[in-house]
Each structure stands twice: as C-alpha cells, then as structure tokens.
Amino acid sequence: MQDTHENSRPELDLSEMDTASEDISDVSWLDVPVLVIFVVLILIVATQFFTRYVLNNSLGWTEEMARYLLIMLGFVGSVTCVRKGSHIYLEFFYRYVPRGVIKPMALLVEVITGLFFGYIGYLGLAMIERTSGQKMITVPWPKAIIWYVVMAACAMMVLYVIRNIYRLIQTDADEVAHKKLENF
Image (tube, rainbow, N blue to C red; front, side, top):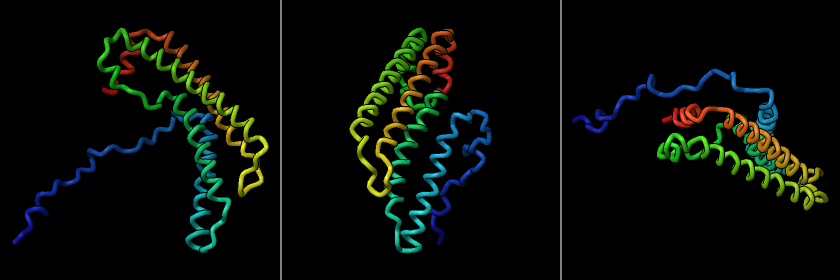
C-alpha cells in the first residue's frame, strides 16, 4: 500500500524561485570599507573556528575582535544603505495615504532619520571621551577606535540624508509617490 502523503507533496518548481542578480552596477568605491571590514571579519571568524575546533586551543583575541568588527560592519554598512535608500521603512503607510501626502511624509522621515543619526553620532562622541583611556581586553588598542568608526559612519549617514532631502525637494510629488509605491 502506497503512502498518500508522499504522493501529495507539491513539486518544487525552481523556475519560479528568485535568483540573485549578477548586476553589481550599484556598488561604489564608497562600499569598499564595508567590504574590507566584512572580509577581515570572515578571516577572523574562520581563524577562531579553526583554532577552537581543529587545534582545540582557541586564540583569545579573535572573539573580541569579531565582536568589534561586527559593530563596525553594522554602522559602516548602514552608510551604504542610506546612500542607496535601501533602509527598512514602513511602506505600509505610503499605501494608505493620499498621493499628495507621500512627498511631505518622505521628507519628514528623512529629517527624523537625519536627526537620529546625528544624535547617535553625538553619543559616539561622548563615548570617545569616556573610553579614550581604555584599552581593549585582549589587544592593546584603544577602545575609542570603535566609537570613532561609529561617529564617522553616523556623520556620513547625515550627509547622505541631507543629499536625499535635497533630491526629494527637487523631485516632483507624483514621481516621489510613484517611486514609493512601485514595490506594491
């Protein structure tokens, strides 16, 4: 007797699956720091894995450096997202407001995010002052390096937000609405 559950499985149609794009035209020289941090992070994590599970004698500094590089990657990677306009935002609201409200709403969102990034950068400056005399635990480097990167990334994000605001002001309201709604 045949199992009916086995025959009732839907076939997987690979032609309907999304494929990764090979188009890298939106990658800029400004993305190089993100790629460098990412590659260094991969190398350090691979070293950590190798020394811990193959040699059974892990290097102490790899965990701390991986943690700090991940923090830096998050902030420096956010600069790329702001530059491309690919940060997560609530598209839901654009769907249910009148088209004439979309441009002012998009401008307000940019102003709020710019203020947020500016405030985070300001807090990064305060953290630089607080950690200027501290060293990392396993590496004799100042902890303030992390906060310098965070502050610089926030400053870059603010500059890109200003650019985005300028572009939004220059763009027709119908075109802004079309761009915001084209994903639906």
